[in-house]
Image (cartoon, rainbow, N blue to C red; front, top):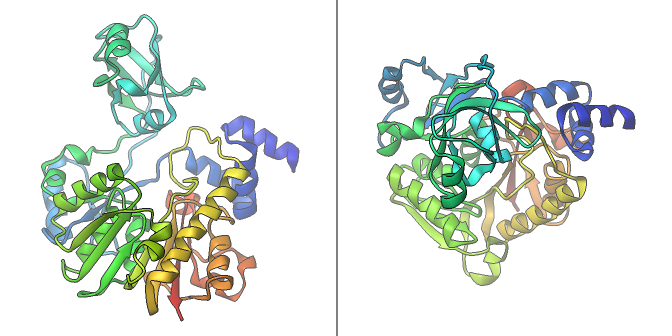
Length: 393
C-alpha cells in the first residue's frame, strides 16, 4: 500500500498523507477521485437571487451570452452551464510562473494579476506566454499586459490577459446581472446546505462563518428578507467581503458582526437563535481543480479540532429543539464523520434527516446514522463536500 501511495503521490503531485486520506474514503474509486479533483467539475452553477428575479427570467437573460443555460431539476434557484474542455492550447516557448491559487484559476479562464506572479524573466508587454504553476504544469496561454520591470516595480494590476485556458467557464462577475445582484456563483452542495438548514420566515438565524456571504445571502433569500440573519466572522476584512454581497444582492434582514464565533456564547451569553449554520475553515480538499496538494494528516487533525470549537459554540446559542447544520468542502473522515461524532457524544446533539438529500450517505463505519449524512464525491459531482444536520435536545 505504501508503494502505491508514493507512486500516486509522485504522479499527481498530492502529498502522501492526502493520498492516504482519500484512499480511506474512496477505496476502489481513489484514482477516479484524484483525477476528478485535478479538473473543474462538469457544471458551473449559479444561484438566481429570487429576491430580485426568478431562475427562469435569469436564464433567459443570460441566454444572450451565447452559452446554453440549464435549470437544475431539484433546486428552483439553481441554474448551470456546462464547462467546456479540456481544450488544446498553442505551444509557445516563453513562460510565466504563478502561484497555486492563480494557476488553478487560470485553468478556468481567469486573468493573472501582478501579485500572483512568481517568475517572469525577460518578458515584455505583448509577449505571448505559457502560464505554469511551480511544477511546470501549463494551465493556459496569455499575452503580457505588463513587462517584467513593471510587474516587479508596482506588484499590482492586470499582468497577463489569458487567451487560451484549458477549460472555458463564462465570467459571470463581468456581467450586468452579477453587478446588479440578480445572481451569485455558488456550488450545488453549498446551495443544498442552506436548503437543509430550512430557514423559515420570521426566525432568527446565525451563520458563524459567514464570509464571503454566499450561504448567508441564500438564507436571507429563503426567508424572503423577513426575520433576522446574523452573519459572524473574525475580522473586518471578512465582514466587508460579506457586506459587499449582502448589499449587492439586496438582503435587508442581515446583521453583520465582527467576532470570533468560537466564543460567541461567552461574549453574548443571552444570544439564542432558532437555527445555526456552521461552515468553518477546512482543508478544502474537495474544491477543484487542484494542480497539487500539500495538505498533511497533522493539518487535517488540527483543522478538525478547530471545527469542533465552532460546533460547540453553535450548541450553546441554538434554542432547545433548534437546528444546526454543519458543512465543509472536504471529505476527510476527521473533518466530516469525526466532527459529527463529537457533536453527538460530547455535545448531546442528535443527527437528523436532511432535505433535500442529493448526495450519498456517510461512511459505512459511522453506523445507523450514516444514511442521514450527506456526502458529495468529486468523481460523481465534480466537488467533494459534506453536510450534517443536528437537532439540539
